[in-house]
Length: 371
Image (cartoon, rainbow, N blue to C red; front, side, top):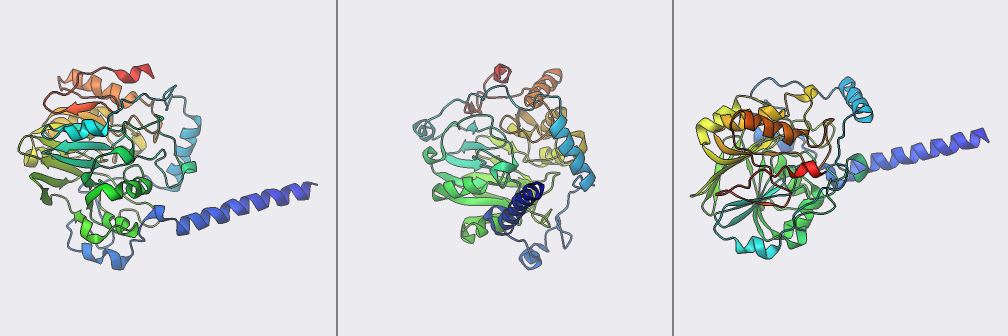
């Protein structure tokens, strides 16, 4: 009897192992292989050392076995409330309402780092992660805090362009890209990330890859790919084989900054000196930990970074949708708002789905305290 049970357990473990390995080897979720031949075209980038992309300042690598084991232990045993007690409420917005806006610069936040920026008559999607789980498989990640999106993908208006900050799963999501692609004009991505998009069937003539400080324009909107302090990779052996960064947008009326994921560094002041002053900066805030303080901002640093980038208003992002770190789910915004008040720096913290009009940003409502 005992042997039969052991054989059954072994069969189950083997089946899971085989299916997991098959998924890892064959799933499109992991993107392109990023071989040396594929990466040969990036040799001219000042941020490429011949094998990997690198940060402008020394950045600790936290991805070792000991740290990973410790982090898993913290996730299992953490005493803090990492998720809201009930589903987060979102405000619904209609396609007609979005289409009616032809001139005003406004922003629709989906939670985490996903946003629709309407500027100079264009619809620009930033890091469209619209699935329920930021992971290569639903079993490998936490679920979205809300039961719905402010507007479903099928109802979104045509997107003139999609802008990607880097290739991590909570920013570059295969199912979202597949659903969106029929209504997307062009993709702008960091060096190397376009190879993932091509792997997923998007033609190279619809993709523009950019290096730090490179500029381009689209129908009156100029944008610059800005530096960040982070890392990349979707699969073992592909760490830092693609670049990471943020985006700065400039129209005749407004300037908007989207930092992407980043730790603190001198690049914020450089962005402010080169490109500021910004009417609004969407600055990473959330999923932080002292273990990886080099690659994610602490909430107080979110305010400092936005001020150094010369932002009139700072909007914390990278929170409000998923649990990817061991802090209370609303701790990022609470701490960022408190720091903004201490420094007399205006902070914008809209509900998910609340339209943020750049000429008149919404006042703080502290909506997260209801959950």
